[in-house]
Amino acid sequence: MDWLDRPLGPLRVRAWGLIGNFLANAVALYGLARYLRSGEGAIVMTVGIGFTLVFIFLLATPSR
Amino acid sequence: MASRDHGYPIADAIPQARLDAEADYLDSLGARPWPSRLLGYLRLGGPGFMTAAATLGAGTLTAAMLSGATFGYRLLWISWFSIGSGLFMMAAMARFTCRGEFRLLQVQRERHGWFLPRVLTGFVGLVAVAVVFNFGQVALGTHLLESLGDSLGVPLPQSWNWVLYGALTAWLSLSYGRGSNGVRRVEQVMKAALLGMFFCFGACLLVVGVDWPAALRGLFVPWLPRGQAGIDIFIASSAAAIGVADWVFFHYAGLAKGWGPRHEKLARADTVLGLAVPFVLVSFVVVSLFAGTLHGTGSAPDSAAELAAALAPLLGEELATTVFTLGFLVVPLTSSVVLGIICAMGLHEVFGWEPDVRSNRWRACVLVPQVALLAVFFPSPVLLIIVIAALLSLTNNIVGWSFFLLLNDREVLGDNRCRSYLWNLGILVQLTLLNGVAILWVFNRLGWW
Image (cartoon, rainbow over all chains, first blue to last red; front, side):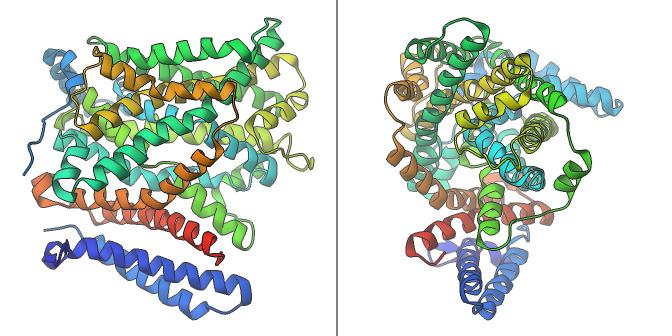
C-alpha cells in the first residue's frame, strides 16, 4: 500500500482519498435527504455509503 | 523547509530534574497494581482535565439539559459515543506532543502551507472560538452569580458582579505557566473544579433520584428520534464533543508540561481519565437530573439560565437549588479560564510569536476573550456567533484531515508515525462525522435538508 503515500499531482494519494471520502459522504447524505423527503434516493444513498466504506477502509492502512 | 522549534518555551520553567524524576516514576508505575497506577496517572495528568473544563461549557451543558428535559434518559449513550470516537484524534495529539515534541501549527505550516495552520486552525479554530464562545460563558456565569447571591442573601447583581467574574477568570488564566509550578497549579484548580461540579450535580441527583432501568437503557441501547431530527442530533452531538480547540489545546498543554517520549502513556491515560471520564460523568448526572424532573412536564425552555430556573422549584429543597447553582457556576468559570489560555496560545502560533507568560504580549492575548464581559450590558453578538459556528462546522473536518495526514507522514514522525490500522480507522470515523456536519450545513442552506 505504498502508493497511498505517493504524490499524485499537487497532493498525495491519501489526501485525494480524504477528498473522495468527503464527496462520498455528500452523496450518501444527499440520497438520505431525498429518501426521507420522498422515499426516493435509496440507490444514491447506498452508492454513497458504499464508497464511504471503501474510502475509510482503504485510508486506514498505515504507511509502510 | 522552515525551521522547527523543539519543545515549548512555557515548559522551560520546569526543572529538567523534575521532568526526569516524573518519567522515572511513570516507568515504575507499569509494574504497580492498577489502583496505584490509576492514582499516579490522575496525579500527574492535567491537559486532559483542562480540556474537559473547556469542553464542559455553557453550550455542552445546555445541550445535556435539553436532552434530558426533551428525551429523558434515551440519549445518554451519545455522550460516551461522542467522546469515545474523539479519543482516537486525542491519541494522535498525544503522539505529536510526546514523540514529535514539535509545535503542531509549525509542522502544519511546513507540510500543508500557511492557510491551514494560520487561518483554519489558529484563527478560526482557536482564537475566534475562544473569543466568541466566551460570550455565552460570561452571560451564564454572571447570571448564576446573581442567582447564587439571591439564594445566599448576598446581593450580587449582574451590573457589577462581572468585575468579580472577570477578575477571577483573568487571574487564573494569567497564572498559567508562571513559575515552575504555574501549569500544575492551574491544572489542580481545574481538577478540583471538575470534582466540585460533579459532586454538586450529583448531590442534586440524590435528591431527585435516578430511574436506573431507564438510565441504563439510555446509556447502552442507542436510540434516536425518527427521521431527520434524529440524524441531526446524532451527527451534531457526536461530532461536537471534541473539536479543533480541544485537539490543539491538549497538544500545547502537554508541551507546556514538558512531556516527552516517556510521557506518552500518561498522555493517553490523561485523555481518558482527565477528559472522557469527567465528560461522561457530568453529562450523565446533568441529563439524569433533567430527565427526572423536567422531562414529560411539557416545559422545556431553551436557554441554560431558563432551564436552571425551571429546575429550581422541582429540586425541592432550597439547599439543593443553591448547590445546583454553585455547581453550574463552575461550568462557565472554568471554561472562561481555559479559553483565555487557548486564545493566547492561538494568537502566538498564528503570528509566530514566542510565548513568554511574563510578557505584556502574552498577558494581552490571554485577556482578549474578556471582551465578552460586554455580554453583561449588551445582547450576545448572535450574528458573529452564527458566523463562527458556521465557519467551524465547515472547517473542523479539513483541519482534522490535515492532522490525520501528519500522523501518517513518514517525514514528520519517522518511525513514530501511526502503525495501527484501528487507530487510523477510529480517526476516519470521527472525520466522517465531521464531514457530515459540514455537508449538512451546506445542504441546510440549499434547502436540501
